Length: 148
Length: 148
DNA sequence: TGAGATTAGTCCTAATACGAACTAATGTCA
DNA sequence: TGACATTAGTTCGTATTAGGACTAATCTCA
Image 1 (tube, chains in turn orange, green, blue, yellow):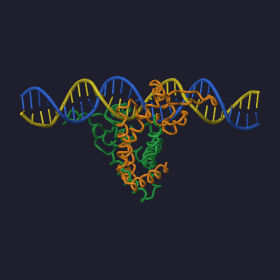
Image 2 (image 1 turned 30 degrees about the horizontal axis):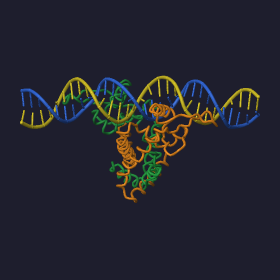
Image 3 (image 1 turned 90 degrees about the vertical axis):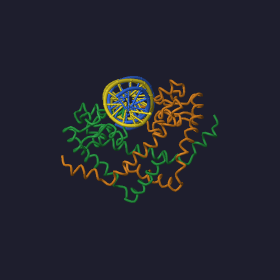
């Protein structure tokens, strides 16, 4: 065990950037999650509802692609939303392998109420960034994403 | 449910930045997680091991503060690391409420092996950023974190 | 000193989260 | 057409994850 090697690793120049990426995201995620406190929705559930809003339904694959929820997890999330009567599963007629998930009337009301509320809640913070800072941040984040 | 209101919300200027933050972080996190494939460690477990490396032990509170793992979760993570004989719980003598978590000899070997390996694995990607881009990204992320 | 507040961890529940194995349906191509 | 690969979701096992109730220890301060 060579402390010199682990210490050299601990001094890598990119580590502050990596830590800041994690902390910035987690600070945002924590704030975002707080917004759902009174909504009876988890973050994942709200994410799905918001993805389905103003659409005629999406398949699991589409929802997974947009929310970054993996399919195994998504089955459970949709199960719970279905139990709450917020979404409905409909087997596609053209391709019977896929399932279209649509908002119920209750789900549409939920979306109409919670989506604008959450957006306003988030906007209050994001709008504290100047346009220039927001543009710079967007560019930086794109470059970071493209690294992986 | 007033599409005009939800559509106005969906057009908020800050949304691309918010999405990019989530995607950049998740792209990084997915790559990071891949690095632990052959290590017999989960991301959370590695995070704890790396935090304990080259120290004389840390309390739950310290570990939680650095890794951003909440205490309830940390109990389970430490349990599993203890089962693998990688860490050890020692009650503090000065304040018997707190528990010092230290690496065992096996844990130190694990740290000495996996930490430099993972850092090199991550460095390979982060080093593709120019110094200027990395500096700009760091500044942007700090500003984002300070929003919340 | 002693009651009340605070702090550090643990325990519990519900919900993610991921990967791998599995089923049903569809596509491919010789 | 028919064997084989591929795709969409489900199921399962293990491990987080957050939050809240709980216990034990410490602190505060009158």
